[in-house]
Image (cartoon, rainbow, N blue to C red; front, side, top):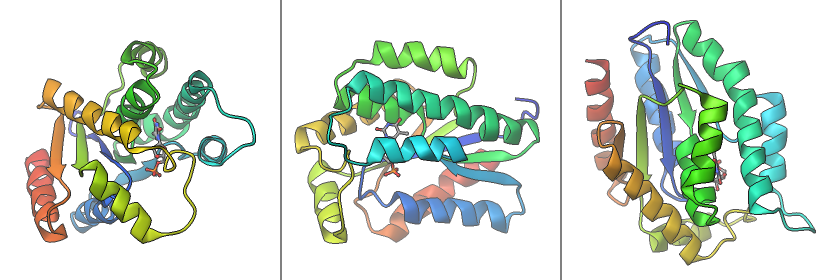
Length: 210
Ligand code: TMP
């Protein structure tokens, strides 16, 4: 990174963890302090990567092989890094990304049971040295996640239709990653009232700016 004070922040969490609401809170935090940032998301973030996102989330008449899913995610990521993330960091902007490679370890590595080795191989190949400085994980139990998704209503995407075993593996993977590198992760209990979640977020962001 060219400017050592500039940071790459990613936000993770399962369906129904309140990621959108809390992401808006993080964005407001940076706006209020006049800090330049790029807010983006994965899969997606560029015209081509958003097309790949549609492919990944839509239902198809043929099943998508887990390995093909993994490769599509990294194809979208390579484009996103090249067109959005690196240029922003190089220009001295912070980057706030709604999901990144931790989601791949959780959903493809463990959810789809491809294993972490394949994810790691592609991570090295596609990202080289690029890693988030901070990853915020909004954690909710699987049953609460499912209840919130049901309450929201509407059509379920290709991931949301997965069963509770899949999401338990996803959640366990996030926990394992946070436990293995506590200096890089902030795991927040997102089943708490929103005000408490945001008080924790505020503390984390203020410490980051210090
Ligand atoms: P979203 O719900 O945060 O918009 O993300 C869309 C879905 O994509 C979500 O169910 C998680 C999934 N996903 C993966 O399976 N692997 C990944 O690497 C990423 C970034 C997302």
